[in-house]
Length: 189
Image 1 (cartoon, rainbow, N blue to C red):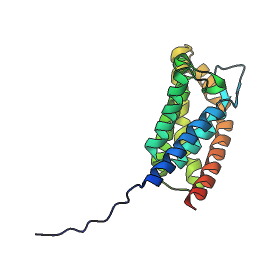
Image 2 (cartoon, rainbow, N blue to C red):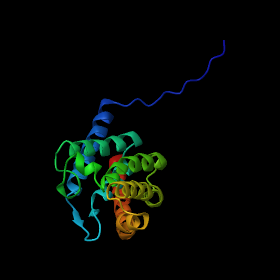
Image 3 (tube, rainbow, N blue to C red):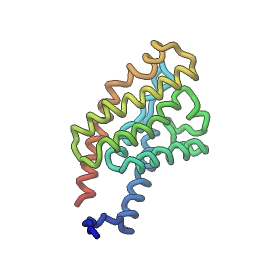
């Protein structure tokens, strides 16, 4: 009979689980707090929000499923009426409104960015993923909801959901990546 070598797998200890759940809970709290850092623009139903920084940070410090669950928890808390959505808003209507696609796609973007980051703590890789993966996913979600709910044509949708936000979102990706690299370095010590 042939014997195969079995490498021991790293088992997550209770301390590891506690640390991970704490990181997740803090990310949900930061998402809620950052949603109050918002201001409207006069020509679009979308607001400039600080939440995008925390979505990026969450994707860059958590495993993919954990990042997805954090954003999903934040969305569910907002959907049941707790004022944690952008601008201190709440309710299912907010998620089904013209800007709801942005918020729903935060979860998809966080999962995919985390998956592609694959545990790296490279600032450049984080920035690349935030700009090349996260921003397009979030913009597509926002465009779809504005197009369908606000009945805008394609050009008007792009003007309202994408163009005014590109520069600011690049800055927010940089901020999220900066925070994540520092947090990851701190947590490894």
